[in-house]
Length: 332
Image (cartoon, rainbow, N blue to C red; front, top):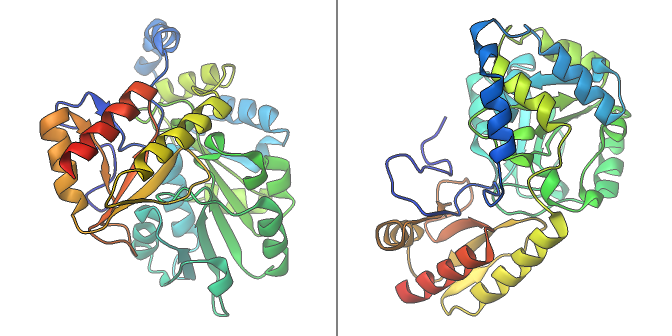
């Protein structure tokens, strides 16, 4: 794992956190109270395979439980897949989440990179794609992906849909659409949808054969009892966002940022997006915002393919967004 993931809030006095791709502006009181009432579950071992949560996810997704594998966040899923197909030829669409590369390196994959699917040639066994993509927020249309996957039956596609709750459904696969492809694994994250990054909860959907292969490498009890309890509760609740309102605020927020001279705002299909400083460093802006305003942004310079001028923002409340715009104007 590299240093410099987002949400590096530890030890800092932060009042507004734009560095994490999670919406923190919601009332979690009922959920917190539920967990408090069920805290006793930590005194017993969890289910070895999180079976009760698997069953609930399968019902909600409209597939059999044989098509679902619950994981300790989407990151465990990434490492399990890389281990299952150790030593194979993986291509990663960049810039993107660093754990795809780290997991593949740990499992001796032969790595190559491309910035779009159009660039891909022969000699690839696996393709790793984040959709919508972190950090750019860009997304491939589902119809395009559906055709592309069908046209490349010898390639295994791993599509990370961790941010599927934050974008239009035309970009993401449902579970039943997913399992119609024998060469497609889709990653999902309850961490993002319900703003529970500290609990680490995700799952994989795929055809039965792929789930069996990946499950063979999964350690028992990797998903803790409190996370399982939380997951079953949250599946009966709405996600922490109202998408149309959130994306509308994202559009307004981006428009105000675009008026700042010396700053380029990149297009997005979700609630987070990249910005580029014309002649200053993102690390300097990050330090200024922390020290002067208690605001945290994501320095994106350590993403493969990006440089010291890039940073990423995730939309927060209108007041927080306005305060960040004002602070950046002051710094520039």
